[in-house]
Image (cartoon, rainbow, N blue to C red; front, side, top):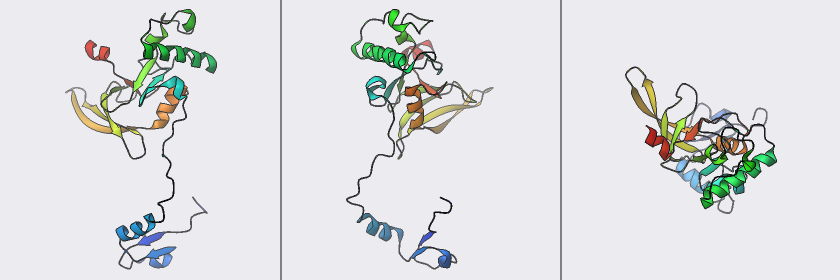
Length: 207
């Protein structure tokens, strides 16, 4: 932070031209230095770097599977509903999915004008390892990928097959990171569109 930094730290066995300007100069190997430092950190509780600010009861179906108020195109639905109404509807759909009950009544889904069943419009965002997703917009719209896990910070890693030459239908694998803030925004419905949607078995059958 500008104005608050103490200065640079140099850890090395050899002298450097920057030794005089450093705030701390340590003549040691990195392994030896950080082994010593780590001995002082044993009793310090290290909290998870990523904590999703979402309503677990309404939006989490299971670990890394979320129920979000977005359609298969990635666009937000229930835009005109109050937060209380959204929570009520999503709660009903969640119970329907978990218990495999019949479709939800039209009275319960008055905000869903295109369908009698809101369950057909809400989406399960599956980010478990091995799950398939599709990009909803931008230059790579329509490209598909597979979740390969999480990085050290807890964000989702996705391996996409990007189209690099549409005329020759050439594709190349590229790994992208989906920040957990997108999951939070998707669950809370705070963005008009989400960058990826899950590919269901029905989607695969249609191809």
